[in-house]
Length: 97
Image (cartoon, rainbow, N blue to C red; front, side, top):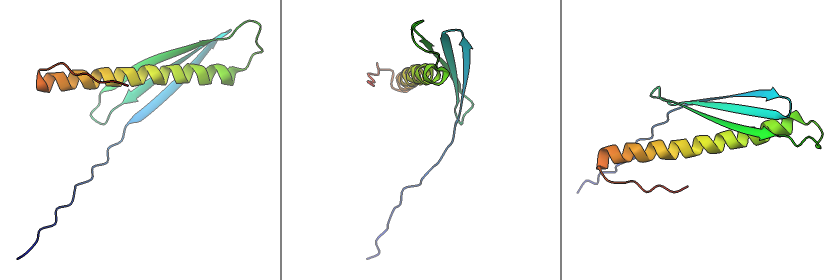
């Protein structure tokens, strides 16, 4: 008797992420753009506001703004995935981060 061995097909897809920063005095803004392999784009923003009593450390403001922008992006992706699931299943999706 001959046995069949099935192997899973691996698919690798890529996406592009770009992030830009704008510094306006004590305010640092980050904008992140995600381009999915199918051409879908999602934008998200994050901000950091330096306390006037703190020394100017642009890198720290960029890190905080970037983290907030990426967190915002994660929430947008979960929301988009939920909407995509609901379109197919016609039932409410309950996705949790």
